[in-house]
Image (cartoon, rainbow, N blue to C red):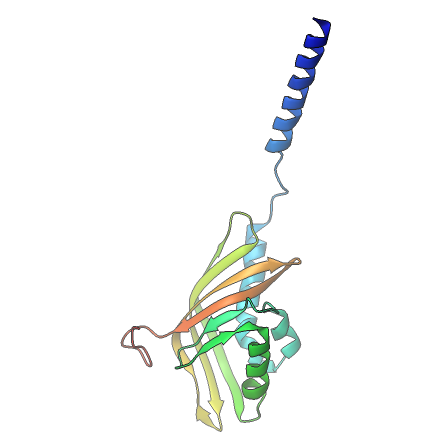
Length: 172
């Protein structure tokens, strides 16, 4: 009988320890600080072109095949970090390209419960020139997904599009 009570007591103690462990909370993250960091990544993900700071720009994107984005232009499907690097070197670093300004408006950032995934939407004016001629996206809808990897936020997916009836907008 004594063995049964020891067994019951041990099980009760294990149960109490198990409950305490399951109720233990992870350290509370500062969600507003995370969103501020995410906003910096989003803004610099476009604004880097003004300074041509490729070191900063490359650090903002997933450096693997998971990276994906659509642009409003026909054939504007881009896949992987190698594609980003190639586009950067052949377009944005070409002396014929000049970044004029970029403005992000109505930015909304959402953060997952776990705090390691975020998604956003906003409007973008990205004014540029190619060979002295305007090559801009004005009032483009911009959405995207970021993931926290090794304590840093990186962009893993983006979509740029015009609305129906807007410049370039087909609604398709």
